[in-house]
Image 1: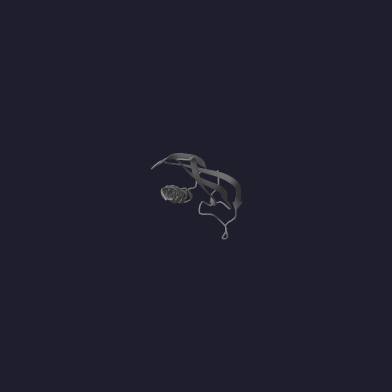
Image 2: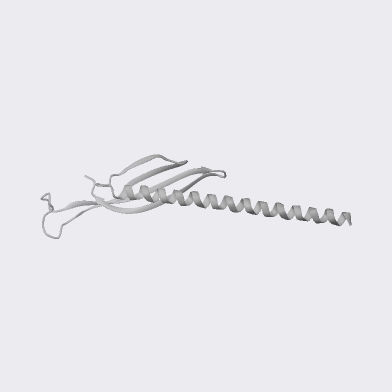
Length: 131
């Protein structure tokens, strides 16, 4: 009878250990998901700032966003062309105006218990041409 009670306690302890590990794993997954959501929100914010710059300028910028997050924005020209306006002349009096297609990339990175993590957002944006 005493042996059966000891075996029952051992089985209960093992079951509690497994449940505890599952709970810890669930909490870590929730924390990681929360950090990804924060990083995506920060990346969207940086993307909005980059694509609404007037004029859109090619370049590389980076910085610390607080809370352990770092950001990097890269604006790269992909292609350029000259476009004729529908009604003859541009406001500056020329018959064409330059347009450039830019690649805008935003990376937000952070460190967690498993190492470095990052999210990346890319878009293409038409801007005033390179002169």
